[in-house]
Length: 376
Image 1: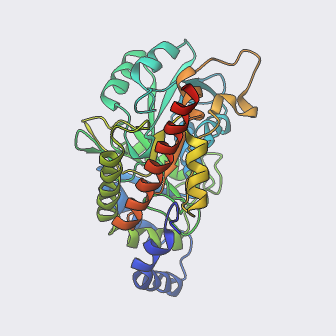
Image 2 (image 1 turned 30 degrees about the vertical axis):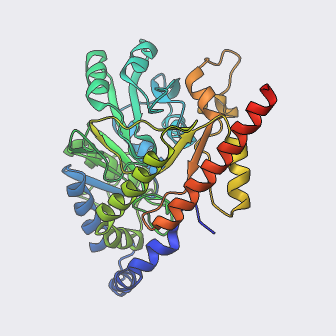
């Protein structure tokens, strides 16, 4: 059996260190805030090349609070790539604004500056650039369009821990960025967790207040805003600090697996996500596009090899966002029927990767042979 993501192997590598961090946090008696949270926030801000990090309970909350801190809400439109997890769009709704879906580039499946330019209206207040599958979007071009239009840019970097664009870390490519530490992420907690990073002190202070019932840092009995309970748990922060020490190596191992896939699948009727020369992907997912997805999934299931689909239904075709005049976004709609995520984990062995590749080759060869016989 080859799992889609081997969390057991990742956790076994850090089991002892996490146990120590867990017990130290329990011994401190500080489960909300405290030294474990401060330590992780400082470490993650430094890692992302930003001044501030605010730990939160999820990536979805991070997006919602980022929008709110920027003053985006009722009457505002936020541009969102339709090829993303629904949380990106749901956070816009939770902030009181309206998501406007934008098609993606056919090679990278990421939002583009041209797509943003075409979608701009007088009500556009922001764009959320999603660094999907581990690759940052072209932030140079996106920031240029956004600056000219006078709109905010938010990075949804939930799948891009440690990725870079022209050597600059995801999270530092705009005024504010949001991360998820869901267990399956490159840097994952033992439950839900997230964070906002920024170098804008005023934004960081506002998000920290919004996450803690609007409480003032100077006076804990003074609530200057209507906020909520969105803080990260200290135990999750302690775990993330331990796993952060392994992140760069784990990402390098993911890149090793991705390179094997790229080399082995060249010339076959599959399309891997194109990686821009300016990007260093963290390869959260290894996504291919193929017209033979169903055949491949059946073959993988028979071999007990885990796969996934990210994502089979574009956001603009999800029930809460559908309307009678729903936009036609052809690139994402075509890709949705062809996407397949291969096993991706820093602990995949060479033998496991070779087995995945062999199943793809054998299945595609059989399908192509059948197609030729039908034509003949």
